[in-house]
Length: 173
Image (cartoon, rainbow, N blue to C red; front, side, top):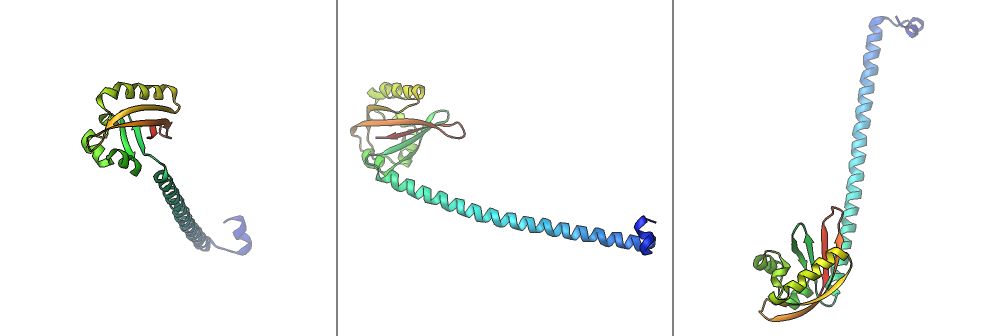
């Protein structure tokens, strides 16, 4: 019999019952606090994620508005591993006639396909310089518009590396 049990006259049978009640209380309250903690974490996650989604949505709306208000057009290419167009602004479409769908279907997402054949070497040299210098460059070249016309473009491009290490070329024409 334990030291404590001698003074309050608890028998070993009674002790087993007390221990069982004690263990069941520990399990009940432990489960209760685990469930409460999960509920609080879920609530916090939902609250924070909703706020985060709202903040991202607001930022996207602001950026979309900003991009659409820029005179001229914007195109965004990724170099993963080969350059491909992933975005063109409405201004770009107004100038060239090409939408993203057109670029993907006609040129398999490759910007170089739109560049006038005689200017491709100049365009490639500018792109190579951009990759080496990693600073803004401006180059002038011609493209064939969707309507079949030759259009001169002055293209200011910058290269940015994202958090995954993918290089992105952001250009204003």
